[in-house]
Length: 265
Ligand SMILES: [Zn+2]
Image (cartoon, rainbow, N blue to C red; front, side, top):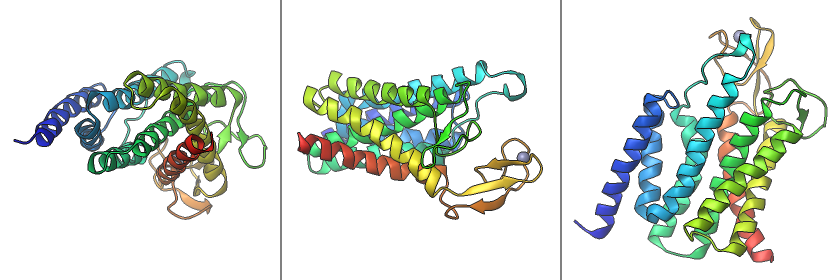
C-alpha cells in the first residue's frame, strides 16, 4: 500500500469515528455522518493532522454552539437542535475538501489559504447564526437595514457579527497552530472568513428563496416547514437557491477573498 493510500485509510477511519460519535450524539443524520466522513477523510488524506485540526475546530465548535443555543431558548421553541443533514454538511465542507484535494494533487501555498478561508467562512457564518439567534434584539436585513424576525435569512445582529469574527479567528488560529498558514496569512484568513460570512448574509437577503407557511403564518426556508411538517409555498427570491446554496457560494467567495487579501498586502 502506498504512503498516500495508507494516509487516506487512516483518515477514513478517524473521520468515521468522529462522524459516528457526532451522529450518536444527535448532531448529524446518518447520511450527514457519511458526508462528514468523506470530507474528513479527504482533508486528513491530503493534509494530515495539521489540516484536520482546523476542520475539527470548526466541526466541534459549531455542533456545541447549536446545542448550547437551543438549551437556553425559552419554552415554546426549546426543542433539541435539529440534526444537520448531508446537504448542510457539504454546503460547508465541500469547498475546504476541494482545496485540500487540489493541494494534494499540486502542492502550493495558495491552496492552504483557500482551504483556511473557506473553513473560516463556514465557522464565521455558523457562529453568527447560532449566537445571533440568542440576541434579544431582532436582526436587521443585511441589504435594507430594516428589522426582520429572528432567524430570517440575511438578517444580521451586532452580537452575530462579533460571533462571526470569533469563528473566523478560531479557524485561523487552528491553521496557524498546525503551520497550515503563516502569521501573515492568518490575518488575511480572519478577514476573509468575516467577509465571506457578510457575503453569506447579503446573498441570503438578496437572492435566497423565501417561502411561506400558511399554517404557522410565518416565513420559512424549506419546502417542508420544520415546525409543522406542512408544505410551504413560494414567496420570493431565486427558486431552489436555498440556505445550503448560499453557504456554498459564500464559502467559494470567502476562499477567493483570502487569496486576494494575501496578495494585496
Ligand atoms: Zn408551519
